[in-house]
Length: 543
Image (cartoon, rainbow, N blue to C red; front, side):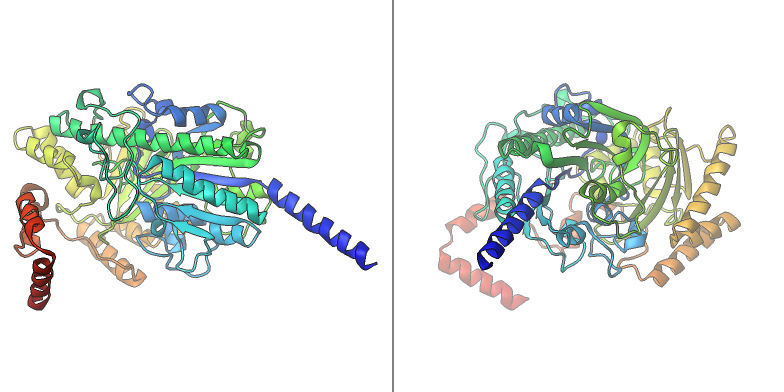
């Protein structure tokens, strides 16, 4: 009898492991700060820039109108992890979720027998400090390292007899971009880390398209060449991950989801709610369940849909509370009448300035509310770093068009309205246009209803502004709500233009401490170890 019981138990264990292995795995691949139209199959002007992403699209379903919920790294990823808008999870900024007990992808999947892992951007993709990752590892920009480290996690999952969820987050094409001047030169690793890889193709300044939101200038062209070379390096990573899935014979039971966390780190994109801010490339591959080379151009989808989709595919009961919903019905070409509008948000910069923005958008129009508006040059974010915005300011000294554009980006308007079919770059604010008066009123009403329905704290600010039409009332209401919500940041103050116009600004901000030059470095190299220790000790004493 005991013998029979042992045999029976071993069969139960064996069958359980077989079922576990046959469960669906999930591989999520994210780009960092990559515009939707930087991808070949999404219409990039650079031929064959992303051959591997294009190949993935040819194997699965490409969504033409996909958007993220928020347009900064951490809050965008918090929205993916929770399936909730940032104000409903407390994931508005660069911090763990402020609200307790929000269901998250890693926790729910872990509790349902999955091994959950993350590779790259660990802090920005971890919803709570105690998130139960089985593996959480940072990674640089070495293409082959993505393959080897992902392979280790997959092998460990197989040994454990468990299905896996692995999110692989590249740092490309986020700044610092690949330096095109380093092409053909050896790449060196720092502090014992693996050296970054060269892209499989490096682009020249003459190769790149210039969006109408930026000036065609040598400095801008060079920066964009570095950006697009970084896009290519990200595509190289996608290629290695696709090869890994093939090498491990995982194609038949692994769902691959690819997207960017938001638009490129340039003016009018990242850290805003314009079309180029929220729209992202979004592709899903699920062999034998999704027809190859499918395109969905009829529905507007959101990154908020990822969590409920994963649960639907895995057959796991939903904890509820989502703002997104499963994409599975769309895999066979369904058209959802409730997917013809998207609501997106921006809350705060990494510097904790709360530039609260809300967008209600259809395929044709976008209505934006800037709750932070104060009528003064105030807006500043990482999207204005690098050469692009500095160049725009410099050109604006002689060109009134660029001067006006810079002023608008810094000041904005309480409300903005755009005809996306005519103006996808969102350059012509139609909020005061008589031609669009009725359409503006329609979107304004919808915005009011949505903010109330979603219990957005900015609803009070919006209603106060609509009722009064007063900028002073808007500012006072915004400050009051900001304080009441206990946001971990500040109400934005007018910006110091020296940030962009004074080459010595950073040095002055440091209190006049001169940054070490190459000559200083050469002098330090000549110092003995004992002399260096003495100098460091003297510095500590001065502090």
